[in-house]
Image (cartoon, helix red, strand yellow):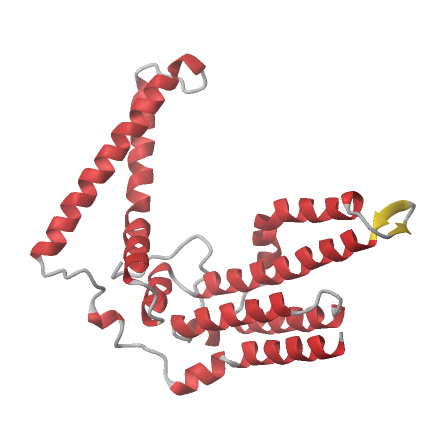
Length: 256
């Protein structure tokens, strides 16, 4: 992890958002999401203000709107569920474009779409401006339980290795006449999965023993927590967005 592996969502750029320490970006994203979730669903203007905040951060991070919209496809299942709510919802109903829809269902659909989309955008901006290594470092600096950060570190570090090994095993099976499209050949596929699990377990044991022999004590290296940690000024800069979002949420709660 010392090389700072980048994930598929990371966009390499030199922007003010990229330069912020990871812990302040994680904290800001979580606080912003909490403010959005706490906003009354009937405060439509508030969600417009949140979208404006996201647009400003995206512009500072040099992340294009097209990239955000494309990657937002991950929420499609929730969108489909939201569109079904006005149809299957109970209570008072209203005619919209010739359709008899539930008022409560319309509010529920708007609530899911608005809050879900804003949460996805905030998460995407965090992923686009923070490498995999920095995400782990940020969680560690925020005093996330060590067992979680260690598991995430090893998973991310060796995920590509396991995927590559699984690909080689598949090529080896196909070269020997195996075709995973046929149901009667599922036994070979299951055996391959079992062999991959055993290899992964043995590899993990060897890595763990090698780490112990080099002085590993069950905690992340102290250097991860020292150099590059956020300053008070950086915390204040990162707090701008969640503070504005919190102000909007509080105002919406009072006016609604």
